[in-house]
Amino acid sequence: MATANDRAVLQSIFQPSSPFGDVVGVPCGADAACAAEEPFAPALLEQARDLELQGVAAAEAGDVSAALQRFSEAIRLLPERASAYNNRAQALRLRGDVPGALRDLDTAIRLGRGRGRAACQSLVQRGLIRRLQARDDDARRDFAQAARLGSAFARRQLVLLNPYAALCNQMLGQMLGRLRNPADAAASP
Image (cartoon, rainbow, N blue to C red; front, side, top):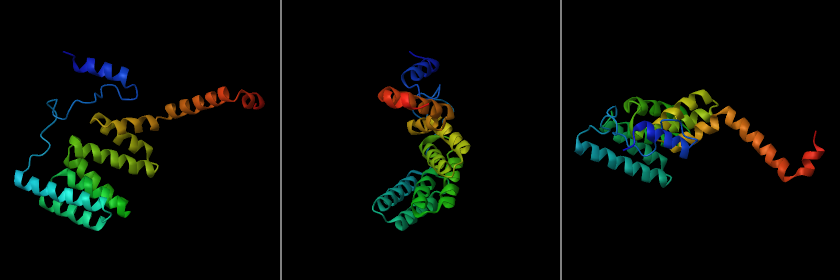
């Protein structure tokens, strides 16, 4: 049986763009530090999930107002559940309310205590907003935390935010361009 370190080494060999120690496929709860994600009364949880599903369906149909209403109802029902805040943040972004979306994302991350699916999705979403705001250091921190929670998308974003990787990609692109067009390379200084 492989140890956690063995899995991390193999991960770094087969997934070189992922941070060392970030083992994909190890579910939340595989270690003792990860608590139960949904410690709510089953009946209330089912109602909140149903409201969220209705909200997602409304958003997909283009009815952002109805989506916001459903997500807000789910939040009123279970105000300590991170998922509805994450979903409402997406709807707020669609409406153009970025400050409201950031408030909901901060709440979802706080409620999720940096663990679980809702926290991971909230970190990625907040990282994307921060990238759009040219707050790359903050975005990098969010993506790093989401990557530790298992987000492959966040790992790719970290690579894109790495200034050394960007410089290497630029230099590689220039070299490949010169190899493809040697005549152009000879004419340039």
